[in-house]
Each structure stands twice: as structure tokens, then as C-alpha cells.
Length: 82
Image (tube, rainbow, N blue to C red; front, side, top):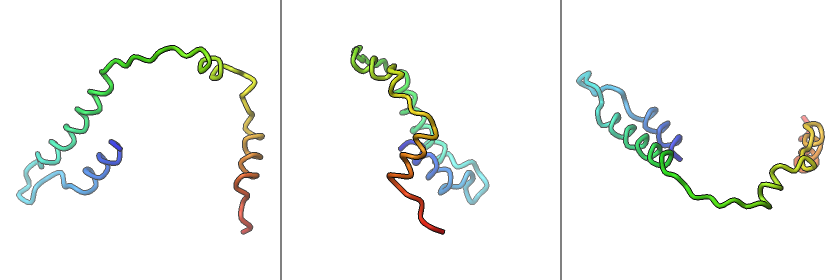
């Protein structure tokens, strides 16, 4: 969401006004979004340890090689004939 907002501001708002001055309105919008991002990055989150989740994520039996993943992908979404 933030990346979309920043891209929209960057593409849709000029860096300079018609008088050739820095567009502080644009800079203010960008700084507001960056301030929000920093606030979320600096907030500590309490995440309780879930042993089952850790075990699942570290289970090497669930690792699938790239060729197998590609074959499964083709089964789910076959390539259309050219």
C-alpha cells in the first residue's frame, strides 16, 4: 500500500511548481508516508513462540526442488498453445 502511494505521488505530482519552486506539498505527502512506515518499523511487536510453526518452517521434508515445483505449476496452470 505504501509503495503504491509513493509511486502515485511521484508519478502524479510535479517536483516543482509552475513558478519553478520546490513543490513542498509533494514533499510533505512523501514525508507523511515515510513517517508512518518508520513508526511501524520502530514499534516492537510481541509475538509468542509457537513450537508447531517453528517445526513446520524448519521441516526439511517440505522442501521441494525447482523442477518439481515447475511441474506442479504446469499441472495447475498449463501453458496455452502458441
